[in-house]
Image (tube, helix red, strand yellow):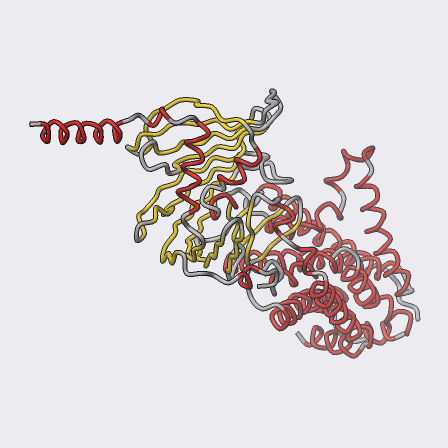
Length: 274
Length: 216
């Protein structure tokens, strides 16, 4: 616990950690502003044609919270997680504090587990902050109401079901981002430069995404991390594909375990000379 | 004696006149009679309970307020999102169907909910296999629209059933049950079932046009 407290305290002392929350806040503000000025574009009647009369608000607090989730989890949150978590080991190695840290009578695995837990705590708080600010600003500007999802056609949930589904979506988004954090920490144990670890984390995600989009590699898609990072979208359909949800959640959990074990092996074996 | 004979003839004439089969009207006349019945309603306001069943829509039954004014002005106020077939709020939208389709012909007769009906087919003059048509089941005695089907390219797109109630001398829809076929909604492959229950009618109160302006 002491190791975790120490890691959390070090993490929150970093400017980049606080800057991440600032960036997320700015993004949510911009999405809310854009949604307010372009709310006619989210017109449900456009989707259905003139044979139907559509009434009621389609842009609500739940809509904004969902919109920022879809926008931010594509690149921004993984990037911020990669930068912050990627610096947890490599940053200390570069600044020379890792040697001092490991000279204390604390097992290396405990140190690494504390760093991993601190990284996950940051990741979860950043993801949940995104949702809370989205809900807060959305409530302030548009008020409460249904959750309308414009993806593969139109999906509409009433406010109660929509809130529950969004809660589940954010829980799954936390899982996705924790997998990114585990990848960043693994690369952080391998490389000495925090920017290399962060950059490579983002590069792995981008390459995985590109490969997954190529028809030639269709057979490999289910093995790629990025194919499962969007697991939170599964609960934003009226009928949830349970098998796909379990498969993606299982993959992400397994990925985190494997990445943590690799990090542990590398961290245990590596000489810390500076 | 002559007086009695005249009275009997008069009664017989009345009986024959009232018993004259609706079939005596042409199909187009029957639709026009049904349209006239709806045209008595200049405007109405109502509370409507809407229940939607569709694979991509998960909303509980909710109540909305509806304002209608002739010829085709509709305003709906709702807290949450609702989707209502326009024809349902326009009392069957017979005026538009008559405008769109030039020919009317009888397609059959029968009963719907115990009421005698004639089925009238509205079609464009140059009717072909790919063109649209509308089938209307009209109450042969009250000239009320009890059922309608909109067809496009040999496929039924929309079917609506109307149950009426008498509101201070006006026959108004009390329940309208609409089935939307797969592919009928833009970009949607799934079908939908929409049930409307109309309550608290206020008819011909002289609604202002400002209610129907955009943004209201």
